[in-house]
Length: 137
Length: 117
Image: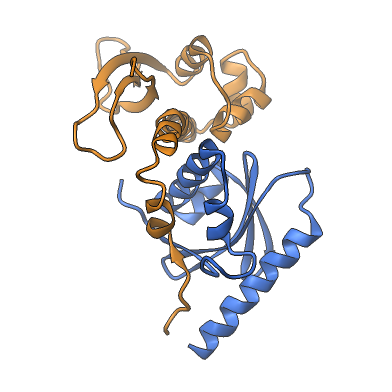
């Protein structure tokens, strides 16, 4: 069945792809959503509700909810507590942008949540999250 | 990550209550980036997992209300395509009747054109 023509996702956001203000905003927003995906994925994997995770991290469910909304400016110390509650540790790494990529023209501070090594056995799963910072320009 | 779903804004820009026009009219680029990332999240995850990331209210058989952060999205999933009918800012806990109405108008238009297409 032929579908009526609307505007595709790509077409709408392509219009912003050369707007420096949008690219800067995107760099600032992406890490929050990467944290969302990491926290939610790990929480679900462990079979935890937001309330369970909040209890483990000694915080409130409402804070977990805000973090998982992707629009909460989470403190690094809070993120570390949450990672700990998810049996993970946080690893930070600076990763330069690849030149020529249209949406990336400065540098990242990359942040990873990785399962805590217990009893000498390193789990294979590594959860990745990224926090972006602009460097100078 | 390869998206599971395509996404289309219906009706297209220039039409009444077009979700594409809503996005293009935003002056706050952070808001645009959040919407792009939020919709990307839906595109990347199966519908059954959306509830982990957003609040979903089933308005009727062909219309979902997705509340996330500062926005509400009205959409449906047609085969492997998410059709977004309407986007608005979340101005209160309860969805405004006018937003539901506008989303319904666009959804009805989509169904009508689809049946005739």
